[in-house]
Length: 167
Image (cartoon, rainbow, N blue to C red; front, side, top):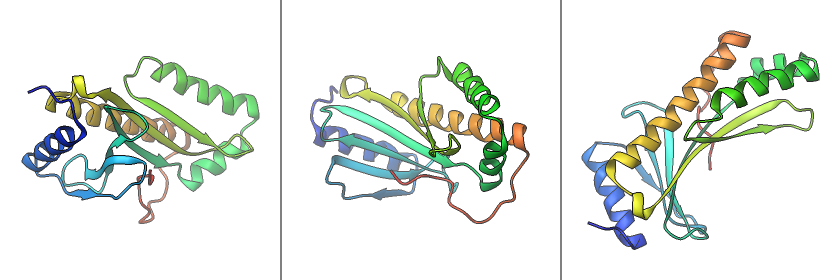
């Protein structure tokens, strides 16, 4: 079935998410035709969002993110600017050909505070496989960032903080 309307896309995405037993929360969003938050991977506390922005007809946006651990941010702050930029450049090179995009949010001092990941496609490519590919690719980029920062700065102390960024 070819998906051409927002209603078809929303119904289809919801059907697939329910079939796969995700916890689904629907948000009222004045900028989106539909906006869901789901657990991904299934049964975990990790969340991703599936959004159809009003300003971009037929676009489906899959979004998630992670906050930088305070200990890691503190270590970044103590680095020399060129050393910190070198670390960010390693990340840029590693992810240059990733199908997911990312936005490393820096404070005015150039210290990373959070990272947001996105995967986009249009209704003409909306299949269950494409939807789950986007979710998986975003999750892999999240794992990459967590691993990259943990390898560089050590594993932070876990404090029951949320792992996702509100979109």
